[in-house]
Image 1 (cartoon, rainbow, N blue to C red):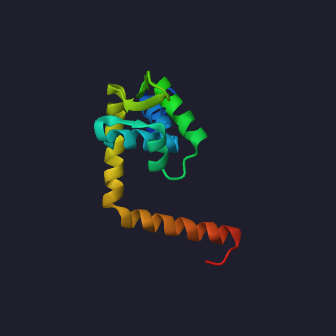
Image 2 (image 1 turned 90 degrees about the horizontal axis):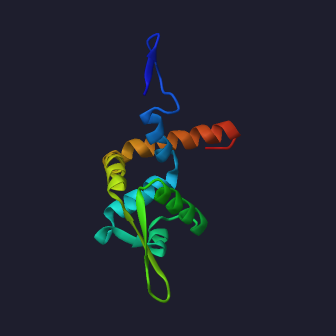
Image 3 (image 1 turned 180 degrees about the vertical axis):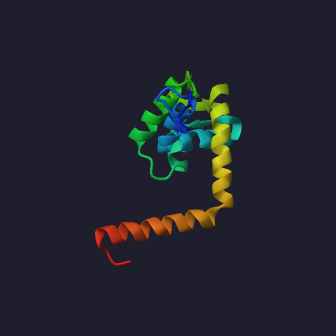
Length: 134
């Protein structure tokens, strides 16, 4: 649990907020959970997920899916057909984690101007730091 020491808040490695933020710090984990949260019928095949997540490599997608499955947030379903067919869906635990992610995505949609301003400031600072013209 977070603890107050001399009026300062400390987040120890095993605190619930830190453990949750570990999931959020992995860029693709939250995006995969969010995609599955909105996917028709709540399940998606690997290729569908990759096409919907611009910029993710096949290797990174498989690593992310494996990690989310190991954490119990998604379930992998293998159909007994030829050629093999596999899809992924949120578990009830995954559904719980997808809900705060959905709130963040909705906040982002409502506050696009703030995100644009933040990005512009970052780009300017990054260019200044590197001595590049802005």
